[in-house]
Image 1 (cartoon, rainbow, N blue to C red):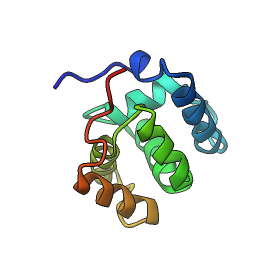
Image 2: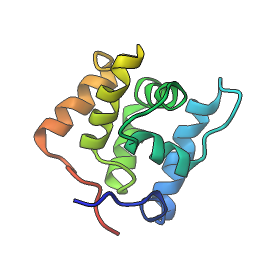
Image 3: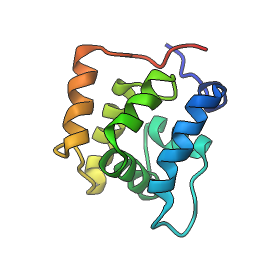
Amino acid sequence: MATIPASVRLSDPDGRAWLRAALKTVNAPLPVETTPEGMVDCILDAHPDLHAAVRIAALIDEVPGPTLANLVSRGVVSYTELKAAMERIRPLGLDVTETENGQWIAEMAGFGVFQDAPSL
């Protein structure tokens, strides 16, 4: 399946708003803010660098679960994509798989809930 570009994923104003809310938490301690498009790209990147990995870890570990669920339900990302991103950052020393959100994301991905971000 072709990857849905960030611009399409963020075309829903509610999805964009939920991601902007999540980014307030992700960006708070960082010297350079990540845009909504940049965050989607970080999640989908098959080979994230440390810059992206820090943002993915913050999204999964620090953003409230209901906000992440809204990102999935609005088609910004899927649980499967979040789980894959979580696994890709482990070799960079950022393991959030055992956090409360990390375990929940893995469980939801295993159930096949919103396996792929819905097409808009």
